[in-house]
Image (cartoon, rainbow over all chains, first blue to last red; front, side, top):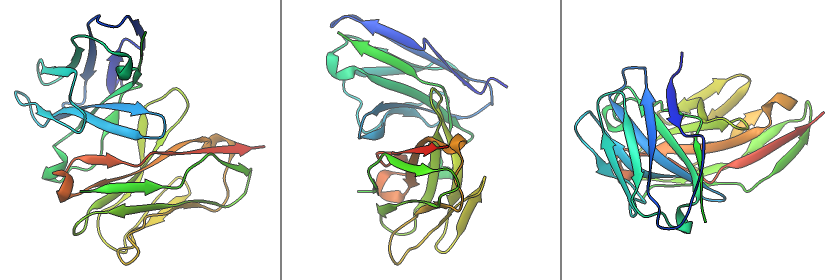
Length: 116
Length: 113
């Protein structure tokens, strides 16, 4: 029962470097999400994919891009990392998009990213 | 727009003490309300939920009641254990946020033996 798997778990980048955070779910969920978690600010939605083939911006999309590679996988890319992107990143999935009545999200264990 | 406000932590309690973590929300209409829990080194897990006014969500000895009149969804547990030490997030899904899951800032709970 893997659920939502994120890789890597830890990463240190230099300012200006790029990287891709990977996320895969094995629950046959239609919707997937990327959040960042910062101290005192809770979790903020970066991007989401309500269904395979669609992606939309969340609350804090600047500096990020996403790809819904297939139904299982949803990646987050930082093209030119900045210190302000130091955070813990969580991927989540749900059976249907929340606006369609499904209300439970399943989260990965997170990726701790430091940009120096 | 939709928002969630939680009491600041950390909350430190002795084992078997009574727990209350306050949560209030701002939203139009009747959002769905949730408590998620994050244990050290892990992702978030749904703890309980309530989808309409006066509903009570409960799980693992935790309870929260959806109070429309006070726009609140406070989390309670009668007797906490050391294993309850975690960060607790109140959250909602509402139409003002286009039905996206919006989180509060989280409250860290430390339970001492």
